[in-house]
Amino acid sequence: MLSAVAKQIRRWRKPPTLGERGEKVAAKFLRKLGYTIVARSARDKAGELDIVAVDGRTIVFVEVKTRTSDIAGHPLEAVDEDKQQRLTRLALRYLKRYDLLEYRWRFDIIAITWPESQRRPQIEHILNAFEPV
Image (cartoon, rainbow, N blue to C red; front, side, top):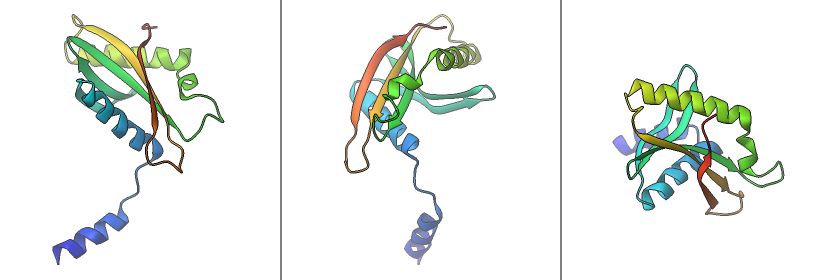
């Protein structure tokens, strides 16, 4: 009987969005590289950080951009100067909130292209993608 209830509940849940799927894949990818994932979808009133991770002794703020194709542009193009400014503000708020300002930190970008016809996405990881703005 319990499994029937579980099946019914699963039907009510929305399937994950492309962005949610991309963030999940990005977190798994980073774990395989040896990163420790500290937070996913870290939100506050100013916005959201996709992934906060630790690489050695460096705090890494990872922006994940997922697209089904490059028709509208490469996923990296979505991280323009305005987005970089917002991410910098969010990262500083995060560092202050958790008293981490004395640690090294950087921004990485994970660009994922995941055509609907493919099971596995193409993942591009850009280390130290931009300087804080």
